[in-house]
Amino acid sequence: GTPIVVHIHGEHSDAPYDGNPEYFFSPGYDVRGPQWVEEVYHYENDQPAAALWYHDHALGITRLNVHAGMAGFYIIRDDKDTGKPDNPLKLPAYPYEIPLVVQDRMYKENGELFYPAFPGDPYYTDFIDGEGAEVDGNSPSALAEFFGDFIVVNGKNWPKMNVEPRAYRLRILNGCDSRFFVLRMLLVDDPTATTGDLSGEYISFTVIGGDQGLSSSPSTVTSLVVEPSARYDIIVNFSDSKGKRVVMMNEGGDEPFGGDIPGPQVFNFTDRIMAFDVEVNKDLSTPDDFEVSASLTSLHRQGYDDVDNRRRLALFEGRDQFGRLLPLVGTVDPAEDMNGDPINWPDNEVYRNADLVGQMQGAATWHAPITENPKLGDTEEWEIWNLSADAHPIHLHLVHFEVVRRQFIVWDSAATESGEIVSSEGMEPAGDGTYLEGRVVVAHDGGLGGGFIVKEPTYGADVNPASLPEYVETFPKDTVVALPGQILTIRAKFDKPGRFNWHCHILAHEDHEMMRVFHVGPLPVEVDHSIHTMSNSNTTAPLVLDSTESKVEANGVMASNGANAQACIYWRAVGSFLIFILMI
Image (cartoon, rainbow, N blue to C red; front, side, top):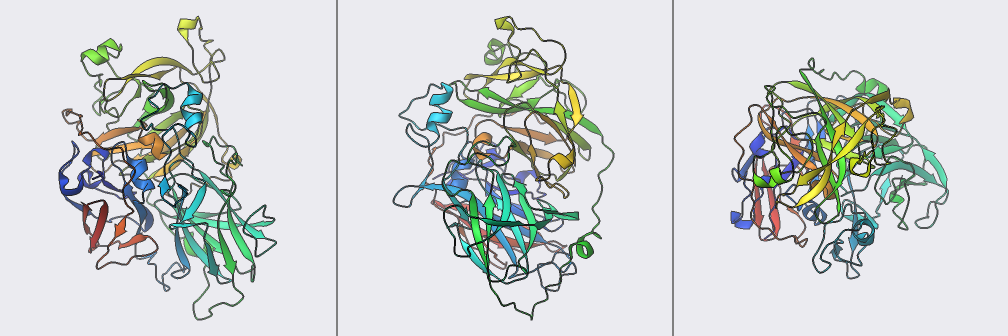
């Protein structure tokens, strides 16, 4: 059977239960990853109320397992955000609180799920032939990104929902592989319209929180970027739309997102997500008295400690040994462990022949030695330099973080459009900014691809937040958009020891090397990273969720926060199904 390992995205987990990609296991545990520990996963749920989610994280096949259905909400409650009608924040509660898992899919003519991988499939020409890659067309190939032509909400294509003329709380999760959504709410002129061009008036909505909980400074907007894996908590008031239809629209486009809004649309109806048909009558027995200013501005968020360490990291776009696009992460500066000692490339023939010797720096693949090594209890600022052409949703396991600033990268004026100085072609830097210098990267099988190191990193002006009104980041986050040509700074406290990950949450990217380990506390002796041979099948059956002694809500799991809220979960693969048992 297909290996899996479950990651609860946003959960403050101990390292053995974090869902590390090398903790995977097959049905019956016949195949186990090199970091596998045990069958039983323990979740403390010791964090403020938030809409987390679970998904597969098996090394190299995450995109396929999630595409097959392994994803859903994992919602935590606390004494303020109780999920009950009498909650002290007066937040809309069931049935006026609606979790929405928004994804995209492709299907065969017979209705089976489809994922492109062969010549003639959608996007194969763009990402393989168009890039000059040399692959065996008789075998499946990883593609740089995936965009489905069907928009799916809670498992249904383009659904509609009847709502009352009142405030609703929508918990939105972008569960897509690669697609960025840019949400807008359109009050359409024709309440029966479903296809074709839709006309009408855009209405505002209020973002009250997201990834890791509520915000003390909500934002009222008409447009919202929702990056892959991020969750946004919004209030939409349908009171003035009686008898009308409101359509949740998407301006994110159908191609790799670089920050341009609207993005290019390739498919017919991916510019819309779902419809809300507003009834005339309202249930007066349930209060509708939520007020943003009164309810949330009193929330107190614990501040971060003084910064103990700053590190500079980078996002690159290289090539693998077949010439395919290879998204990578790495370091800007030479790598050091938590004590300031150098971290070196492996001293073996493969790395020496690739001229990767001495202290590590620049792009690195998953199996290279760990370069991010915070001390236990330290608060760190991470500068993430996006030196690629596209935006990337960056996710850190274990922690929540705050967005500190964005700055522009100043490029060397002699560099190519992609930022390179190619000395073998006689190029020389002008000395007035950042540039990239080519460097070999080593794959897990010893194959050699192309990456980069950063030279003369140069800071530009701060990005004015007012220039990015579609980005709302006023709440604790675990995923954030790193825009191309910019330096994103985040701040987080690393308060549990052990092995965790950071990566781009475009699933096709994290499956293709854009993911690295970080280790909190003293580094372990490096282990043999070889793994069992695994099938690259995408035929895993959809997730079967069986919840006992817990409340199941709209394709997700509810958990409470408190002294008695620990969860003991048995993630067990049975044949091609997954059984989820939650005991509180």
